[in-house]
Image 1 (cartoon, rainbow over the protein chains, first blue to last red):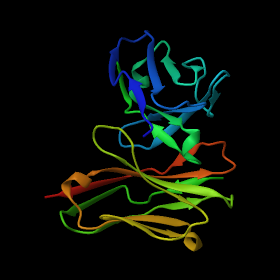
Image 2: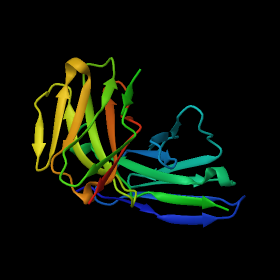
Image 3: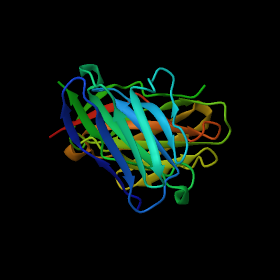
Image 4: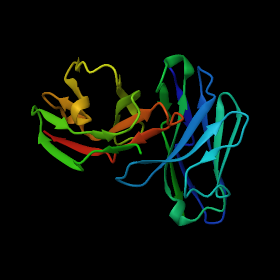
Length: 117
Length: 115
């Protein structure tokens, strides 16, 4: 089945530094990937849609310069949290759409728990 | 506008009880898909089911069953004879044809099954 690998699973960083999170589709090509943020005991909030070879589409209220998304290949999308602050601490989840699985063929990564100290 | 509402924030049951998780959705599209996902404490999202808007047949998979009612815009999920391992957060989600592939999630229902 479709597998999406997200790395790292946990990361602790200091305020002001940048953190990169990777999302890879292992056995399919994903032209579209999605990045979500989840606060404790809250729902998944879509941050942006990542399209291979083009700029990401950000949801309203999401800072583009803060959350840099790059989708350089059909199997890899990265989310970089720049100049991280404690309020950026959260659980970040990516999903990749497998065109071969029809509408809604989404596979989710296992998530990255970011803690900014 | 598309929206998914899971009115039950938390549910607590004792093992072997049946439990139903409610999901109500809003969309103006005639073609859409509904999903249920399970999120255990480890955090990953586990796909449970996908249902398209043209198929109102209820579905059963082991202890899980789903009731899709277009008349009330609901897609409820029932776990029969619940087990401790069912403890998780459950999300209902909507994908509308006109929504460029974005899944809209409900707020989630935290299910706690006590032994």
